Figure: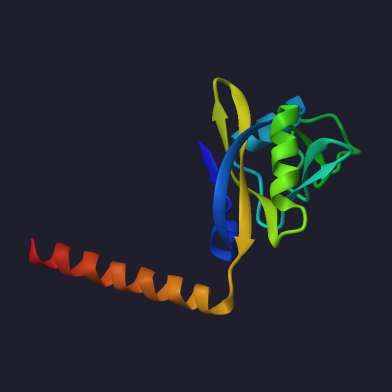
Length: 146
């Protein structure tokens, strides 16, 4: 199962990809396995030498006993020190940001695909839509001729 952040792919040019682990509780893991996670408004920030996934919405698992659960709390990402330093260097002073691209399970552990991203301009959005429509028409014509 792979949860993709379509909003990030639409709003940003992804310049570089990186895989990071994430610290989750057991109820959060069960909720994610049920497909209940929203990455649309989330971003990644480096605070005190540690990377955090901020504003990711993981709703409370129905059978969980914790009634004081915060669905949008910050969750720590597991990265090596040199990876965090590299990300800080790539985002400081430049017009780039860190966004979660997707979340997936690998060897029974959840991973977050982190992207160093640059914001798209309005004409980039229009160009991407035009390209997508053009490709869709070509696919339809090829399917029609077969």
